[in-house]
Amino acid sequence: MSTVRVRFAPSPTGYLHVGGARTALFNWLYARHHKGVFVLRIEDTDLARSTDEATQVILDALEFLGLDWDEGPKRGGEYGPYYQSQRLDLYREYANKLMELDRAYECYCTPEELDHRRQEQIKAGKATRYDQRCAQLTAAEKAAYRAEGRIPAIRFRALETGETLVRDIIRGDVVFENTQIDDFVIYKSDGMPTYNFAVVVDDALMKITHVIRGEDHLSNTPKQIQIYEALGFPLPEFAHIPMILGPDKSLLSKRHGATSVMQFHDEGYLPEAMVNYLSLLGWGYDDSQTMFSKEDLVKKFSLERVSKNPAVFDLQKLEWMNGVYIRELSLEDFYEVALPFWQKAGFLPEKVSPEQQDYALRILKELQSRLKLVEDVIDLAYYFFKDDYVYNKEIVQKILGKPQTEAILQYVYEAISAVPVLDEEHVKPLFKAGLEKYGVKMGDLIQPIRVALTGTNISPGIYEVLELLGRDRVLARIERTLEMLREGELV
RNA sequence: GCCCCCAUCGUCUAGGGGCCUAGGACAUCGCCCUCUCACGGCGAAGACACCGGUUCAAAUCCGGUUGGGGGUACCA
Image 1 (cartoon, rainbow, N blue to C red):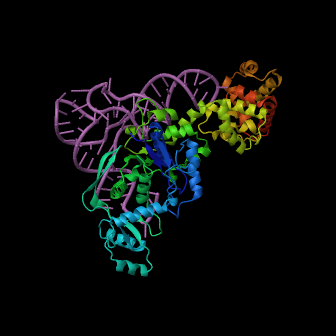
Image 2 (tube, helix red, strand yellow):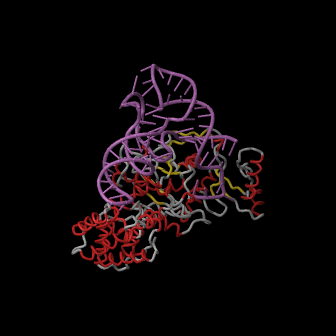
Image 3 (cartoon, rainbow, N blue to C red):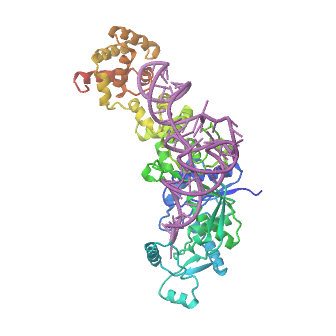
């Protein structure tokens, strides 16, 4: 059995979206599972839309996900180059070969003419097909067209009878009538090959054994198979994986929200969560496991278990899963991913002192079970770093609006001033004493303190908050709150 | 229009003729824990699109209907 060789072949026309990432992941998993080779090829034949920046962004996204490629950009390999724009003479060579075999011909029709005829066909209620008017041009006719200044495209002479069989690992045998396939363009007049042609030349030359790609390519596969056969290339195995849809069941796109892998990165999604979640889109293992480490996926992944139906992208589940992975992080690792967010927010400087790091670690410990996205560390920790937090109006009304609030806060102020050590062991008895004095429950005492200290009713346990803030800040904040209450600024 | 693919809880899925009064996860709801919010624990509700076959027996096999998706470019 020869080694498995798979590839991911994005076109650098934007960012890497989750659909592409999932395709890359499945290819990578298949390669790693079979100890094969994962090739990365950049399909940049669309001159108008491809950019170098976009290529870099895709590379960054793959690196973020930890999908390392064995051959491709920055890595090389014996089947390069790995940019289609650098393989032009190869396509030329095989296009010429097809013409020699009379399986391809020059077409002098312009895109405008073609489009016009297509519109006519639609109007007449007929199938939109190329009318093959350039299929048998004589040398004189070609010369005449050239004299007009026309530059030809090259069309593949598709089979006119019979049928083409696509053997798909996921979908089984799919049969296409050859009458459905018309003479399609393989070489554009701008000197670039089209996708359906370049993909065959590249996959064949790069010795790809398994073509794993989105289901949107299934309908084009018979065209490609005809080229493989015309050129005498051996066929690879095909596996068309289901599409990823938005909540409204239409193809997932920007209008459904974030779809860019790097955007997820920027919001604080962990690569472990992305990979795990993406793996579940169109694939499942058994009736109980949903959490998979990358190693586990490599071990358990198989194309046979890939589902046939499209999957709706569920952001809530991704968020939940990200929270799970955040909670699994060691405090040190959590610090590493959280730090940039705090620095960006101005909570911590570029150069963090040991004291600041210690403080950060202590905060993180309290926050870890409370966030879904790393990005949340900014909002959730605001009052640990800044004094200018705004009091949430509604919550202030609800909690500080109660009759005894002022007296209770005053009591707490004095208690905390006097307590020898500001920790639960020493503070709790004082709070308990306060309960009897004012005839209230613990919540009635703690909630006003929480609001005073944080501006909200959401925070870690009050004793932890007290300790983290320290006596000075606690007293100052309670005093400020009391003042605002008296001034009527809060309620 | 024509061609192709698909169809289990709201969502992702397990299920490949009897183990299914259909299992798990997210979301939802309730209870517990509790100083709030989370986390955690327990529980509830919730699906085999429809119609015909085949079979002693169908979510599982076949056909049709309906619905969704994709393709049909000198985009990839």
